[in-house]
Length: 368
Image 1 (tube, rainbow, N blue to C red):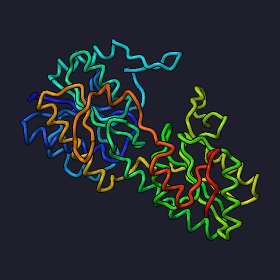
Image 2: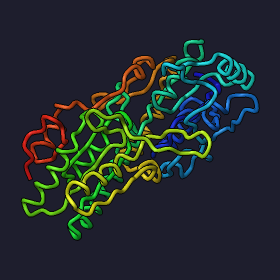
Image 3: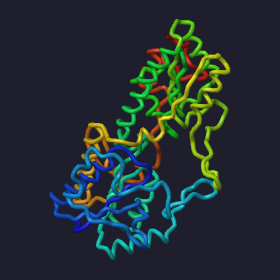
Image 4: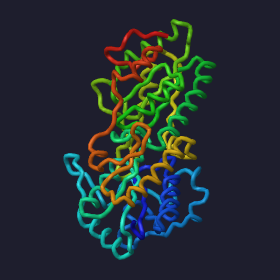
C-alpha cells in the first residue's frame, strides 16, 4: 500500500462529498497506516503554490452529515478546455506540473471525486502512469457505469418535498405550479421526483415536449374538476423543434447558463389557458445541505472501497454500484457515455399508467 495518497473533489458540489472524504481518511489511516492529504480547489491545488493539508481521523470528525466539501471544488480550471467543435482538450503543461509537485510532496496516488469532467482529467493522470481511483459524483445520476451516484437520492428528497408543498398551494388557489429542477442532459431527478411528488406533467430532456400537449393536460384537469396542475421540468427539457433555453449571466462575458424553461412554460400556459401560474426554480437547493441516510451510506461505501482498490494495486478505475455490490470499472468506460432515461422504460411507463403526461407528440390520451 502507498505511504501517502491525495484526495480531491471536482465539479459541482453534492451531498455526500464529505462523507467520502471521511471514509477515505479513516480507512487509509486505520487499515493501512497510509497518510492522506486533502488537495484544495480540485486539481488546481496541485499547481505551483500547492494547497494541501494532511487529514487525520481527528480532522474528519463530524463530517458525515455535513454538506458541501471541506476541500473546495471547481467547475473549471487549467486542466481542460473545449475546442471550437466542442471536443475536450487536456493541456499537457498543467498535468506535468501537477505530477512534478506530487512527486516533490511524496503523494503516490490520488482518489478523485467527481463526474465525467473531473474523472476525464483523472484518466489523463492514469495514462501518464500515475495511480488514480475515481469516485462517481453527480447530482444528475447520469454516469453510465454505476447504478447510483451519491447526492442523487438527497436531491430527489428535496424536489419531492418541494412538490408536496407546491401541491397544497396549487390546490388552494387553483393554480398551475411549475417546479424547475436540475437535469442538463438527463431527467432522472424530474422523473423520480415527479412520481414520488404526485406531479401531473413531467418534462425531461429525453422526451421533447409539445406545448399544446402541456396545455391539453392543464385543461383536462380543469374539466375533470381538479382545477390545479403540478408540473416538474428538468432544466434541460426542450420543446420539440426548439433548442434548450439559456439564461445570460455576467456583465461582461455574458456566459450562457442553462435554465429558464420553467418561466417559459409559465408564460405560455397563462397565455393559452388564462390560468394563474407560478414557477419555482430549486437550483442549488438540491445540492446544498446534509446528505440523507442513503447517500451517507453509499458515499461511505465508495470511500472505503476506493482505498481498498488502491491497496490491491488497482489504478485507472472508478468504484461503482452494480447489483447491490461495490465494484471497480475502467475510468474510460465510466466516462464514455452518460446514462439517460429510456423513453419507453419502466418508470416512464408507470408514470403514464397512473395518468402523468410527458407532453410528447405521441402521448397517450391524458387520463386524470
